[in-house]
Length: 282
Length: 242
View (cartoon, rainbow over the protein chains, first blue to last red):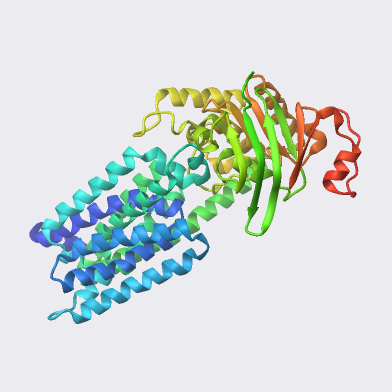
């Protein structure tokens, strides 16, 4: 671990990686909280995986995969959102189909892209050490979009997450804010893909917020704690993986997963104790 | 002449092949306290949803305060039968009540001071001030009912619509809720759905009986015959005094 800190001072790419992790954790905390409380992890997974279609196409046509990913994520968020709003009964099947179709398209494009094609692995599992410095600015820009949108429409997002029927009665355009929320999820997915790759995105999107949810009872506190946890997981994951030369993404996810399981057990015990105290007191 | 608050004219509604409302007409005047009773699946909740603008009638028309329900939804306070939200949602009672102020202030940003004051005042009115900072998941059935009532009232509605407000609370809390409603009726028109025909007749000004079609009665006219027509022969009337 101390080797990591020495290296951090020496290598620019490590500093970039650390910054990328911290920038991604803002999205993971703020939007991850909505994904957890609104229970749309499956949709977020669908968006994340179908992004491969956009990345593959961008690569094939010689464009920036980051731009391709962003475009594909937004398109897929709007498609999945429309599916949910229009055909609620077959939601699962349709999202599953989009999930697989997106990936299949991506794999075909990548297979037909001439030249060096080890990119597939870094799309799938991420490679935080290869994040170019200019992308940090893009990531910071996307964070700004996320945080601004959520703070402007906090009441509306809270209302549609909590009680859609009530929000509709109070004149909130539920479909619009629902699709907007999914677009924010799409942006977050693209941020996180830089760090852990599209397969592992769903873990970083849900675990920090779920852990925060074990301890606090307000959405804003959940966002703050989830952001801090996300920052810890990416930074410590990076540090832990550096010495033994492990892939950084999976290390971060294992760290997050381990903490989540421990936290779930601990909070369960606490809840039982509290209940027992209540029962004996009453 | 004053305009009716709610005017349902010859409305029929069906979900797929199931006809739940057939030629229903109902007029509610300002200041009335109308109890809507009827058997389960008799169309009570559907009629409420039509009045709230959550559903559109296939036949007939619904007017609330002289306009389409959707246009005036914010002037109606609604208390649902089953809370349509997960009980473990990380949110405080105050934040839930504040949602009744949605659509009143500016589009952007957080709730204003005036919204928070209104929430505090309304929580005091339903005698739930001490619950303001509690997470919603820790409330009992009766407490939750008061909070949902506060959410419906905090937007200063002209009409209050309640769907089985006492289905999940004990009997003492039930009469508390009805005393509160009787007080609110001095300034609000109230439409209340209940399956407990005997209990509500002590409070309401008029009872509407719905089992796909509608029959209206003054509270004095409710007797065994009406109940039997509505529910079939297997209902026993229990004599009771309040």
